[in-house]
Length: 478
Image: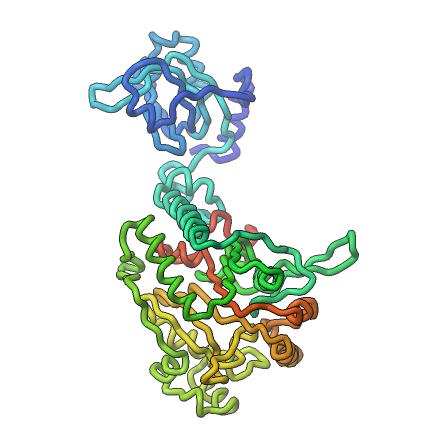
């Protein structure tokens, strides 16, 4: 069997026999799927050659475009010996071709283009993996997603569904009166989430900048500026670990709704999911990991402290920091240096509670200190007016009534800075410019944040975000 280098050298040799192997333009009258329903007349098709087989003076080939695949037939008596041999000697699987001809049915009943004329559109120098030989390794599939997309219809379908989901979310928000906006990706101070950032430097202004970890603090500035319903869908960047539910950059969706609270956002979340699930899947039930998830509303609501007590027997309201640290040690939960009570409780919850939640569930009223940008409830000040949506053991959404008291926000920023100095890196850093904006007055509002990638992975029954990110971050190949 020839090596890759030998195949490439042979194809370069063929390339030199073609007058114009990479022409500027081409002609197309039909896609492959359109040609299959075409009755008669001359048509032009374009696509990638995915198979070639010779039977004496006949060559059968399949080409593929985005719409599907179709068989071509090259007859020596139609094309002439020179042109027939030109195809045979210079064209390979993987090349892009333009073919002119008429549709007919073979004796086996397959609709086929009887080729009268053809030309090379793009000569491929490297071979495609033949029936997945050499591309069965999962890491290679992620590295060479372009090859995965050529042969794996299931992979292609996932990305079509991803596009539909984002489109349906935008359609829903537009009908609800929300305005799509864009906020800076390069930020002088990072905030809006508790995560480690990527740092860079702007030479023109001689200043350090960060890739955003969330758009939250800029979207809130727009609430201050008078917009009442706004959202953004875009990339965010977090310099953290990589696993099945985390990628260093991912697509994040946030909206902010003035004069609303977290309870109204829960209702709107149910309405939004119900709308796009019916429009895309025509059902409120999906399959994930060989189990069914039912999105029928209303969804269960359960307090964070109740959930923790149910699965760990920890009474969060009675236990102090030292006691919680002992419980974490007993449960073999690793706690980041400098963690407060809310952080430790969350780490325990992630290991012992969240994996047990399957159908859509709102986890409400996390402890004060869990999210420094959220309001407390009026009846219980030590609990936040917030929720997380968990489905299939995955956290999909974080949402809460936004803190709009500038003095309380400043106090919480200072508390976060103390934790940062103790060694806890993923905290909400202080942002003086945002505090100044907040002092001009921000209306009561509720905010919502969701990772699009996790949502798509869940709805397409994918085991990892790498399955539904076109070009996931990968370790450099040795």
